Image (tube, rainbow, N blue to C red):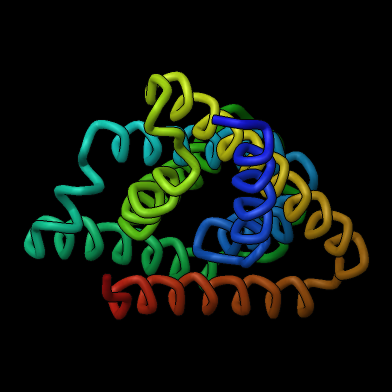
Length: 205
């Protein structure tokens, strides 16, 4: 794989990652409710989730999901149900409690696990890797090292992208400390997550 192929992959990945999807909606929702302290567990969760998706695609799960309508539908419904659950939970949450919550390890782990699960359970991501990565591989060279480089590049860019969205959202949160505004933010974020869950179900390969 040449440097130009890697650079093209990195540029294309950056553009794709900038488009908000279910993972970014979750990151923004948590950052608005929890503040800057949510950035680290959320970003780590996104990195772990994307790593799982890349590994699964490399292992052939992406091709299996693309070929098996039943398996693809099962994974899709599981991910959609989880997104809707998180959206309803955020909608019903107490904005005052979110604004004053202490940074306890359990809370951080919950944010980490939510971000990792939402990212990893999105079958669109796995199929995307299977369709996207091979376009930048050089068939005349060993494939595994090339795939490892592209995977590491994508996960790193996803981490940076999630961190940027989390920081922007947590900074905006400082401007909206009133309970009524926070409640509206929670309900907007919750509605977006539910909408993302519905969109995941409606998505077709």
